[in-house]
Length: 219
Image (cartoon, rainbow, N blue to C red; front, side, top):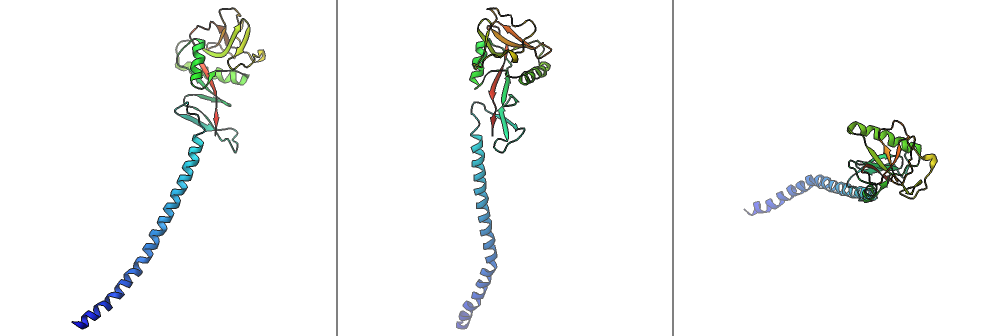
């Protein structure tokens, strides 16, 4: 019995040493995986913060934004973003309303969305609006007019909503317009016109659709 008791501890010790030797590679592997997981977590946190840093540059006045690549792309600003449902063109975003209001209410509605009634500065911009209105004609049966940001405080003294001076060389009146009468002091784009010359002055109390414009956000 005493010999067996002396032998048992001696025979058990090699078995424990062998077990520890077999476990050592597994311990190393688990440790390496833990370190790798930690590094990946740190990387994801960094990317998350970078992403959020960009998202914070988008104003909060729209629930969703639609971004497209800038052309040509620059190193700093590679994306141009507009509120969802707005149409991009150059450095601006345009909203074509689905309801009608008088001119003052139209301007207030645009202002409530962080924009204003459209200010048309170039023939290229007028051409974009003309084509976009033509595209929307497919979805509307009746003829329609759309308010722009041009209005007269006095007969014939036209001024844009953002106080941009009126430029006759960048005006696109229909033939025989403007009427220049006290009853017609606000301007619409006449949808049925078949050319870029489609502005018409109307009473400001007339309910019409509207085009709002705001600056695009670049990221």
